[in-house]
Amino acid sequence: MRKTSLAQGNTPASESTDRKRLQMADIARLGGVSVATVSRALSGSTLVNAETRERIQQLAQSLNYSINLGAQNLRLQKNLTVGVVVPYDAQSRQHISDPFFLSIIGSIADALTDHGYDMLLSRVDSERLDAASQLYDSGKVIGVIIIGQWRHHDQLNQLAARNMPLVVWGGELPQQLYCSVGGDNRNGGEQATAHLLRAGRQRIAFLGDAALPEVWLRREGYLRAHAAVGLTPSPELEIAVPFEPDAAHPILERLCASGVAFDGVVACSDLLAIHMVQALRARGRSVPGDVGVVGYDDMPLAAFCEPTLTTVHQPVLEAGAELVAALLQLLNGVRALPRTLPVHIVVRASAP
Image (cartoon, rainbow, N blue to C red):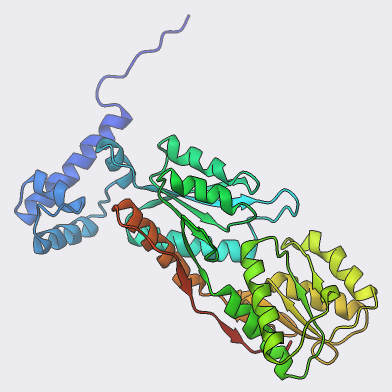
């Protein structure tokens, strides 16, 4: 039987530690300070004055020295991880690769990094939003940001009632206990619809599942724009469509084949709008000649599809900063109120 023995001298782990100590000692010698001061400066401690901290950090950079913040946080027993939850809708099977999800996740990640926090990305069933509490209860995260309210506003209220630090991307709703951050959905739906009405469109289809709070608010704007010009849209023009393109596509094709007359479309996402354009063209109808189409979100692809897409711009870049700022308020024991961010329409070729 072959025996295994430790080689004499340092193990790889101890060699790494020794090398790290040498580098820190080098920084201390060059900076004319103690090793303890270097350690505090590199961890951002306010026990070291700002001028010395900056000088030490510049020396460390010149020596290609980096501190492992994750390991340091473990040593200090300090959790700096925030859970970011993207609910999973089993009915529509909307993928996390949806351009809107990718954009807002990136925005949140940037904002967390700016504040020195880590991000743990997770998915939960949209029918069980309360499952997001497991991340907090287990101690994996210190707070949670959920992207979307989905159909369970009540579950989000229950989480907030437990005093779990929680911020949700979505619209402000009645009897809301949690902090939401979102674009002005009602105004966005109104702007999209009013733009088509001003262009002379008389029968405007609304594409979106109004059981979802954000879509419900956009539908409210759709109805308000019609009322402002003395019109009432036909109920047959309100089409409950999921966000996921594969699930939406057959519904859009049936609408185009149904014989229902419409000359405008307000779609609750850019992807839905683009698929609507494809469905219309497959039936020989031109965009914008026969039908003007307006999307929602203003994802980068909206400016590059054919025709380029008129759409409602969501403040995604600002959203990450606002979501994180609200969560930090809660973590500091300060009440965070719902925040509604302004939106605006971007006019392009699909509905000039």
